Length: 96
Image (cartoon, rainbow, N blue to C red; front, side, top):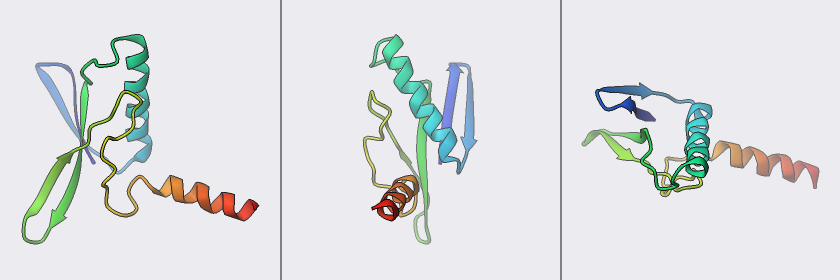
């Protein structure tokens, strides 16, 4: 996951991360900003999902979020951002 982050148009930061926690905090932050300001406010960050293909090389796909912080396209590779959901289902199954 790659983040392009900017609070100042003259300065941009590119952050590469594998941290679901960081991504989820940013999604929550965007949702909270939408409640305080205009929900259609432009986000100060963009999230890109990187995939690697032997023939095409590395490609970046922009992952937009809606006003509630959910990704509008959940077409991730297996195991990405679905682990928490799998863990919850597994724990629920153990209790029943």
